[in-house]
Length: 626
Image (cartoon, rainbow, N blue to C red; front, side, top):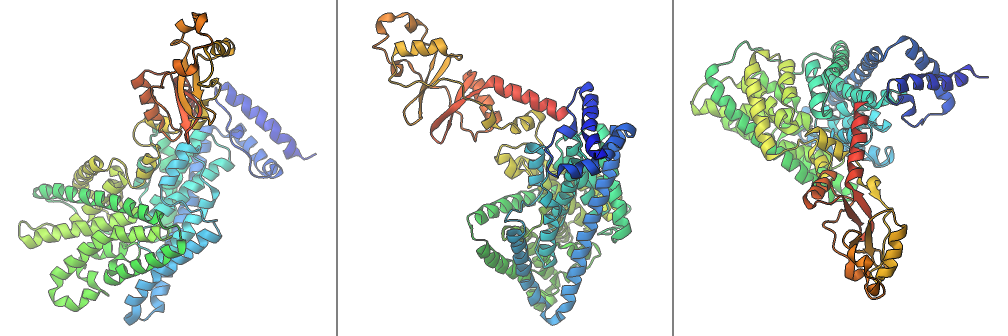
């Protein structure tokens, strides 16, 4: 007899008793086993038994956060280094005099390879961006598909290596989230702990790519996790720090360098105007991004998307070379004071004699068209995110703003300060993550002396952007589907309820041609005092309530002459299965109804009870608190 096979059921019973004594469900029993049972018995049984005996839950969670940080850090370093090395190789392969033409052709190659990989390896399924991770947390118990362990890395590598105008941050954070989720599933942690490990993975990915552990933690809290108790910050910090150590060992240091020791107090009005400028640009980027997404959804043919999108992106890169790839090299040129190199390889280079206006023209064009290039890259089938694009646009916005002020003669301002402040303002506006923006920019540029301006610019940019766009580029699409994670706890919990599962089908339907006498017989055997009136096609015509027809029940003379059609009334409201739960609950409050009929595709489907909604809300609240 296999000892492990015999031990594992005993382990389940032992650990289940300990968890039931604590008043919660044991995580070993919470998830379906997808691996062969004998493999789990042999590998996980002794390990989990040893863990239960000698390692408490808090220490176990810290160990898992280190593991997630290590794996996510390695994934981030692998992706970043692979992209940089591959880009250097394809650059060196083409002679410099032909490089401008090659750069305009490379993107279509990368997008095509990404589409082919998605179509034939992933089965055509590739959810892009951080939004799907938020959905996994809200609706799927923080279970991230295993395919995301590699799909995001491969497709973003192919896209960005060949010049796709998007960032690697979103794919890396998604990969880290997938690592955290699947580590939690394999090692059988609880729902709440698995959710935390998803955040640990996202934090580790951002921390490793930027060498910024604090920013990684804040990104996880602001963009991935809706709320977090103080003790859970420790695993996030540990995971983020572990990934940063890995990055420091295997990857080059800071992506940008800024040396500054002070900032001019008299520049505060200019900082506030910059915040307004970046806020308006953030609104522009969010709206253009989703407008382009809707346009691309109307094109079902993927190969047409590749051709049209690849040609359009190649044309943009041909005219504005700074749009090629992530664009961090352009940001570094601006920070080092080499803004004149923005026109390198550009068609406008023939007008170098008028370099001041030329640089501004290229900078403004690249700033406004970056979001277009990113949407074309993603919409055509490539993979990448808006995180890096926001930093790129913010750097150009700060440069253009400061350069115009200096040329106008109003006051001399340090352009390098406005470049990094513009990056922070755009990130706070587009991603709706002001704390992440403050600490990320301070960490990756070494600009801690700019903390006060960073606070002013990011907070103002965030507030103005939120006024026009209540949801970030990651959550706007989810909000339209009724999925809320970052607004308030009640709305978030209600959004996780599935209306289909709450429909009650034990209400006895009646026909409009039924007589009062037949209705009385139905009343005698029914358990409900509300009856839907439907026709032969199953369409809802009205409702009959026992309270409203109580007087007619005692009128024996009309048992055969009075029909249900004469007694029925119209319901105060009708629920559609696609309606948002919060809106449905509000409707019940407004019309004073305890139950409303549900109509799906024109046919009666059942009733939705307020008590059922509140009971499901309570169960969800208890589940989230486990």
